[in-house]
Length: 280
Image (tube, rainbow, N blue to C red; front, side, top):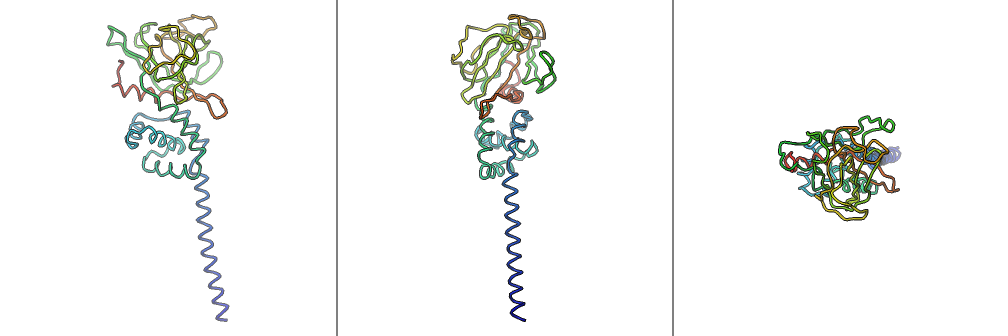
C-alpha cells in the first residue's frame, strides 16, 4: 500500500510538472503568435497616427539614431498605436525580431524608407515677403469627389497668399526624378524616388524651374518649381479649380511591387518643427 501511495505521489508530481511546462509552452506559443501583428502594423504604417511629441520622444529615446527610431515606430504601429513607452517598445522589438523576424523586417523597411531621407521642408519663403506663410493639417483620407469618391492620399500645404507661381517648392530628399509632367488630378507634378525607396510626389505646380528629365539626380533642397493650382482636368495647363497649394504625397511599393500611399503629415510636421515652424 505504501508503494502504491508513493508511486501515486510521484505520478501526481510528474503530472504537476508536466502541467506547468505545458502551460509555459502554451503561453510562449501565444506570445510568439501575438508579439507582432503584420496586418495591424501595415494599417497603422499607412495611417501614421503620430504626434510631433511622440516623434520627439521616440527620437530622444533612440539617441537620435534613425535605425532605433524606426524600430520603435514599427513596434508602435504593431501595437495599434497603443504602446507609447519606449522601454516597453524596445522589449517588444526584441521579441518581434526573435519570433516574427521576417514580418518585423518588412514593416521596419517601409518605415525606414519613409523617414531615413527627410532633409528639407518642401516650401520656401517668398523673396521680399517675410510675412507670408503656409498652413497644413492632417487631411489623410478626407473625402474627395473629383474623378469619383476617394480618400485624400496626402497633405495639402496651403498658401497664405492665394497667388500661383510665387512660393518656391524644394525637394525634401535626395533622389532620382521618376515622373514629370501633367496628370489629370495632380496637374503639373514631379515624382522623385529617394535613396531608401520612397516616392515623393509634388503636385499642382504652377511651373518647373527647369526641364527636368526622367532619371535625373536631384539633391535635397533642389528648387523644383513654384506652388500653383493646376490640375483636376484632362486639359493640360488648367488652373483655378481650387486654391493655390502643394499636394505632398508619399508612396511605397510592397514586396510584390504594388504601390501604396502613406500619410505624409507627420513627416512634414517633423521637418516644419525642425526648421523652427517658419518658412526658409
